[in-house]
Image 1 (cartoon, rainbow, N blue to C red):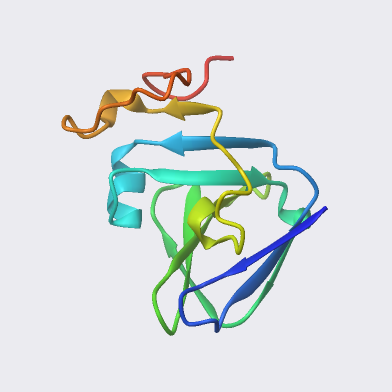
Image 2 (tube, rainbow, N blue to C red):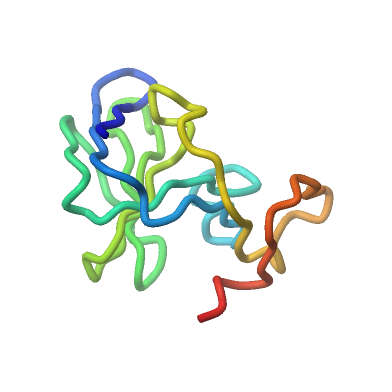
Length: 130
């Protein structure tokens, strides 16, 4: 299956092929700052599953992750692992914004205090335990 998406202005388009590795909501402080939002809801794919067209910029938000955005409109699209193992695609940027549903919340120890999580999904204080 191929799912498509893009940025607000349409200058960047992408295709994600196959099923994601996981679909999670991250509440860590870095994601909050990078997304300008209380959390980052994303579907994670292997990089080879993603095809991107358009002019994007990158910002190293941590030693492990580059944030990728549209240079024209600023839409935050991807969290790209520098080691090449995965890329997180912002759920709201897919054309079918309801195509994926998260299966858990991670880094809830850093979630904003006013945010109430009552969706019944598993919640982890940090990342998923091994």
